[in-house]
Image 1 (tube, rainbow, N blue to C red):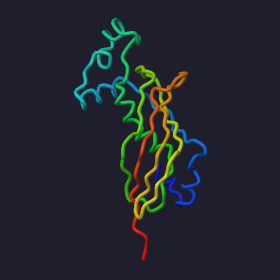
Image 2: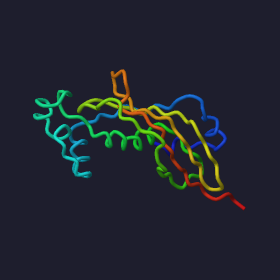
Image 3: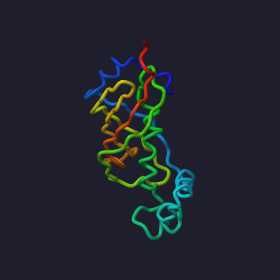
Image 4: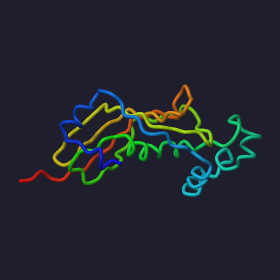
Length: 159
């Protein structure tokens, strides 16, 4: 849980351009894919029709939506990354680059790999850039790679 990994800002800064953080593995099952399809109204057969996907697609069954895989970055990061003591909330700021490299087949497990590549400190925010990959268990290529920007809103300094 993130609250157990809150660290001082000095320790957070020390992660810039060093080391990587790995999340636990997360199974992408058909129920998750179906719920995402319902939320986004994207019912393409390669995602929601196992029989047709097996018969008509090159994947041998259904695959996760690319945007589902991208959206998993939040939960994977929450599992892996430290937070800064005094953070009130975190928000997504955006992406500089996203590439979908490999499909995530139903029933496979994915995990996040994160490396801090940028940090901008302001009065009450930390803007952090991450080089991220969503890896597929047993796969050679990741499902996606991206440069993700997050913002932590901090408590104002005591006066």
